Length: 104
Image 1 (cartoon, helix red, strand yellow):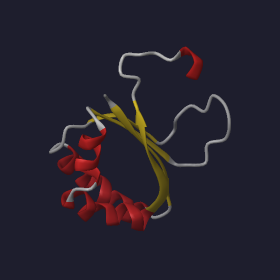
Image 2 (cartoon, helix red, strand yellow):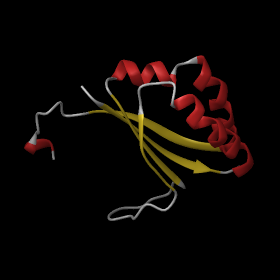
Image 3 (tube, helix red, strand yellow):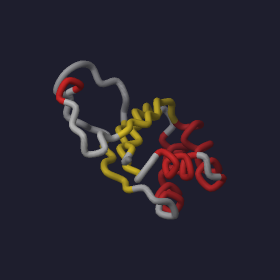
Image 4 (cartoon, one colour):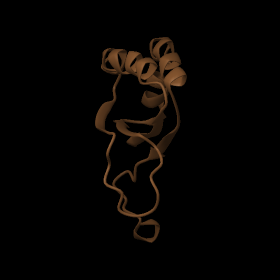
């Protein structure tokens, strides 16, 4: 079942975060994910948006997400993200073709 990685990032040191960004795609492309969106100005429809960057990714399953996120290659660059930002990374499971109208 497809899963989605969603990150809400607040950048406080652009130089450190840019080191992370510069290496991200080289590492990410080695894994089974698809980068869906990266946006520093998402349109807020409802509620408060306090982060400075939204990132959305898809993976074929949770194991593929963890293969990427837990990999030595990704962890080697993640230190730059930690040095330059704070945030929340979420893993959401897809519906697997079964829409749940009650959960919408």
